[in-house]
Length: 383
Image (cartoon, rainbow, N blue to C red; front, side, top):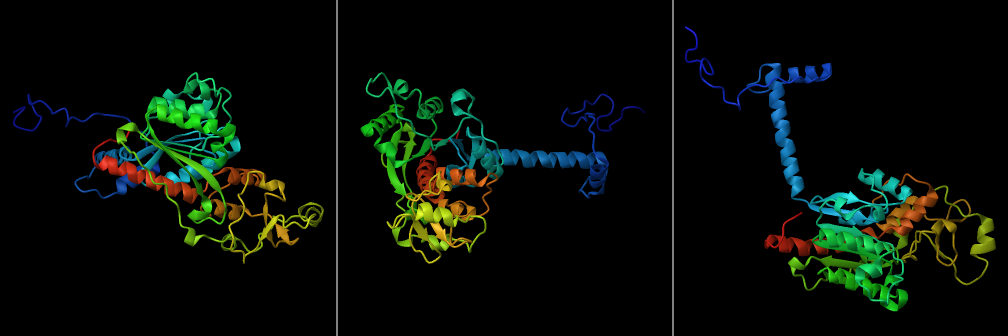
């Protein structure tokens, strides 16, 4: 008798979800062997094992995507080698976009974060940047030539790199932003530049706060003051923000981060005698492993061995040397295993241009605490 009561036999329709679909998939002999050798409950045939593995892989990917969607998304502008990102990023955040025009800095960034930043931000449209919760930027500062004309904030900032920060903020309106710059930003053009920056940010509705912080108060053996600006979306209703002040009582002396005579960093005797110590005026600053002070700010031109701004170390083949690569990383708060795949000159430039990582982390932690408290109250959701 044909048909009968067998499942899916005769006129019984097959459930579309149970119907098998034939697809051709090419697998390597090695992978076929691995699959066939697996012991999977209720899966005897090669085909059933493949289906089980695919189903489990889909579940895993969907779970990971779900977890990723709940992370705080941030973008990293004027990224340099990723100092601000190093301080901001944690297991609850994910970087969705980065931009850096310098090819050497991009190389170091890619070596450490596994992604090559996009190029010149002035050539990138704001609508092409992914949605994000936080904007990070250590933007360079140029004077605003149109200050005084008062033809509108956007007009006044045109031609400056701050304008690119502003246009991206205006388009995306992220929940927070974190900006960093040199203290001179406060006094350029008698304070008019900074006034325009604050008014421009506030014109978007953000609650804006700023302070000058010093790296030596955040566990680094270096005097390095920077102005830090943070802002919060108007919907967060944040009226006050307390910047971290660090800990003066636990300052670290430079002797604690020095290596034992690393090779290749010596300063010639001729240069010492003819330039560095040509005057008996206490210049330049010289330290050793016994030094319990915080050294001068590490500058991007450190490799030029300048007697007034430089700090040098006793030791080496000639009795005096430059800071080593490892010591520069420690001065800035980068981990010892941070990769710097560029020339020594570029290394000094990159470290001197970067940020004090622990200081940025302290500010980032304070910002996150503010945001998390609002999210718990149901004020906002992630992008």
